Amino acid sequence: MDATNLEVARIFNEIADLLEIKQESTFRVNAYRRAARAVESLSEDLRTIAQRGELRRIGGIGQSLAEKIEEYLRTGAIAYHEELRAAMPRGLAELMTIPEVGPKTALLLYERLGVSSVAALEEAARAGKVRQLPRMGAKTEQNILAGIARMRAQSARQPLGAVLPHAQAIAGALRGISGVEALSIAGSIRRMRDTIADIDIVVATRRSDAVMDAFVALPQAETVLSKGSTRSSIVLRHVGVQCDLRAVEPDSYGAALQYFTGSKDHNVQLRERAVRLGLRVSEYGVFRVRTDRRLAGRTEEDVYEALGLQWIPPEIREAQGELELAERRALPALVRVGDIRGDLHVHTTWSDGAHTAEAMARAARQRGYEYLCITDHSRSLKFAGGVTIEDLRAHARAVRHLSDRLGIRVLLGSEVDILPDGSLDYPDEVLESLDLVIGSIHSRFRMPRAELTRRVIRAMESPHLDILGHPTGRLVGQREPLDLDIDAVVEAARRTETVLEINASPERLDLKDTHVRLARDSGALFSIGTDAHRTEHFAYIDYGVGTARRGWVEATQVVNAWPLARLLDFLAR
Image 1: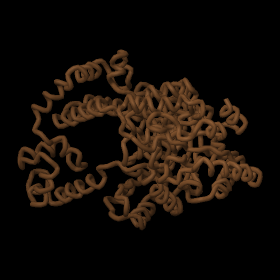
Image 2: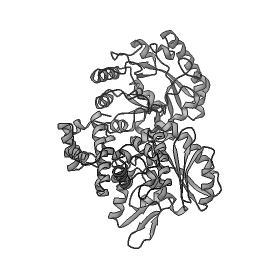
Image 3: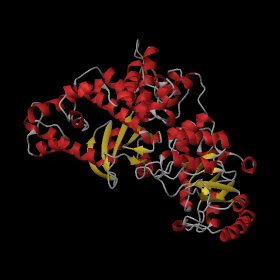
């Protein structure tokens, strides 16, 4: 994300914090928080949008907020923000990042104890000073210390791939408990966000006490934070992530699942729509305000239908135009895992994979795939066992025999390094002999933006490059994406008919969702590839499809959801 976008989002969030401390209206506070989230999710920089005069077309940005963004772009600051900061003791907003500390408590701590940072608060609590304040006590003091510890443990959102397996294991264990009638993972995991702060699970049951007893007794529970009849919370062993279980009656299950799936902005829009219709929406159902009669709640489909909307897939519940399309029954038919006919990014023992080409092909056939493309690394990537030209020719003969023997079409391709000057790592005559060529960057990540962008676009202009592999080179939570002009890359992809990969490896998820949406709206094509290095990695397709769905991609836009004949015709062109 552009640094300007990050800074504007940070300022808007801080304004919201300062207004909350001043106990301003919730409407004003939420307006700034919505604006911050909208800016954070942009796939292009604010300066470019402002130059087109389109700031007000960003969701959540009205005239006043657009003027503040323009002020920042002119001066590097927002006067209103500076005024609020000057009038407020420093550090109070930081204190409010602790769940147990609200605006009044933050102000009390500052005025009575001079506490203006989390570190100072921890020191005061350990010294027994907090319990001496009005409305406080020993229990509150301990809760604050526990909240500080949890905040530090969870301060960094964890990659989806690190959390989802734990959530699935817990959900699987709970489904076997007597009294569980329906159960689903909710929250940002269900929306398939690339990073996760915590786990939310919703259960329909008429025996909530028994279910909660089993939940807090799970072997994965390191700490039990709370236990009640409708909500319990634990911290998971090893990963340090909080998991919340919400229990509702079966008649409210759909409403609760919708409510706790979010996102917050989507739910706000849904509730605003309900108000206009004379309805009220909560985690318990949809109700007619005038009579308090329940209209829906058992299923999510019923909840949306009661509001005059088509059911909206969880991945696109982000307040980005989905409600307007749902009202017209015009939502896109998002790609599904079952639409995928083959994997076009697979490594074997010929380079740095763990399994042979035959083992990978057999595993792909067992998944029901129609085709598979072996794409081991090219010769320059020596640390990953890059394949020489001579070996590549031998591999081509072996692949032809695999297709004949195994009943799945096995193609031979290569993940070819994009060299610093934008050329590809094999000569043209070798590239021409391959069924498919993926071009990826694996070195010289820190080139200047313009130079790096030219490097990628030159590679895309090669008549031999079919797919741009993991286009931004990011590793979720480990390595920042390449400093590319994404708009220019997307335009080049459309112009050259280069397919953009959505790399499904959970450590990459590259392209990310906002870039996928940008490319999708521009008419680009995609490949969802697992980058599998062993047979188990074919399961990563779930992550890639989730990212594609977050980017509103349909199966027709995914080349490896096409039948083999159509794919081969496209590659031949």
